[in-house]
Image (cartoon, rainbow, N blue to C red; front, side, top):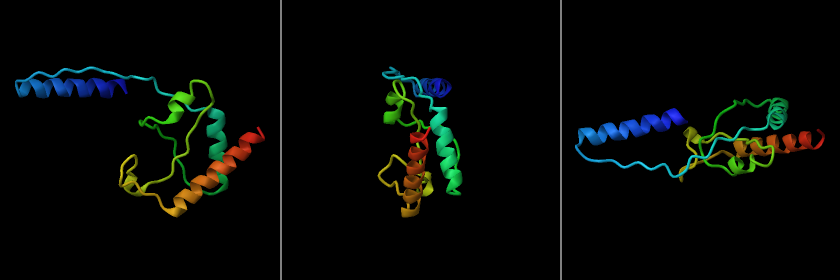
Length: 116
């Protein structure tokens, strides 16, 4: 994340120089990333495998409640596919099947965690 921020700042400065104007940059928030709990991730993986669903581990760059919850509690997230990969946008759309699979994964994961 830091390298992306650095690249963005440098690009803004370069553009300002080319256009002979000034740019002022102030970083107003730089919360550290949250790490998901391995125990929860393992149970979620077991759940998707039981349901014969595909999955991948990914990094979320969006601000989710879990960013703040992870400070106090073991946390993880389950994402479902969105049409064309578009999320956090008014055009976001997920199929009924994707939502069903997400709910099924969540239910199985919670059941596994309750028996852990």
